[in-house]
Image 1: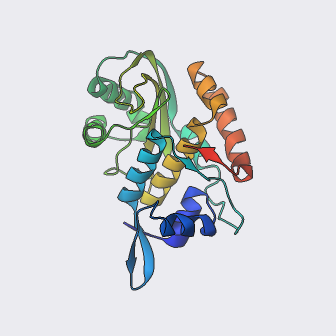
Image 2: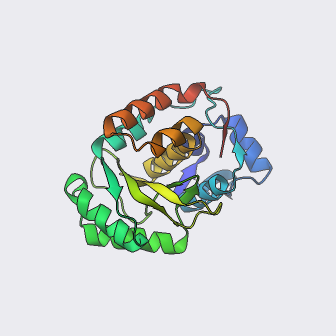
Image 3: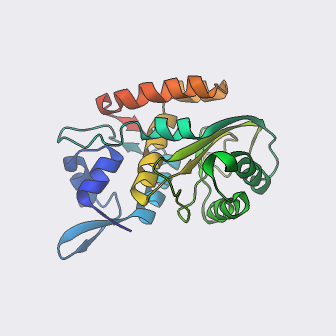
Length: 232
């Protein structure tokens, strides 16, 4: 899917000036059609995941040129629609993913085995571990047939190796399910912002209830456009 210049600036919550600088320095993948920049959603996702895993410093949270706020509370809504699963036994990736999908299938109204297979195939292509104890399982091959995105947060009973580049064990999984490609990228970017914050990492280590987690996410999204720098 092709994304326009304005789409990417809004989805990543950066100013157009910043995006232009990234393009000029070849820091972000793009191509041109008839002289206009276009961005491939899959390439952007891979670039963002790679940036998170390698601790790059990227200036998120800018809106000095009036970036859209239409998706301001998208992560809050997604977690609100989804569920929080505590003390999930840590076995293999495959068993955990299938178990989570079976648990969440009634909420998400999905076929758990089919979606689990898609998630597992995504993990084989590239681990969704962000490091710091957090992974974000998702698949670009499945979209919810609904009007609200969903997220399922899972606290593992014991930390396990999810393939993080930094070598850390993973104890929190945040499964993302979006209704369209743009919202998928936006959710991924929001989680990237949120999970690099020390207070969020500390909160997730305490395995908060859904209510406490939503309270933290709401506070984060309210203040998103006040932040000027997040290190990922």
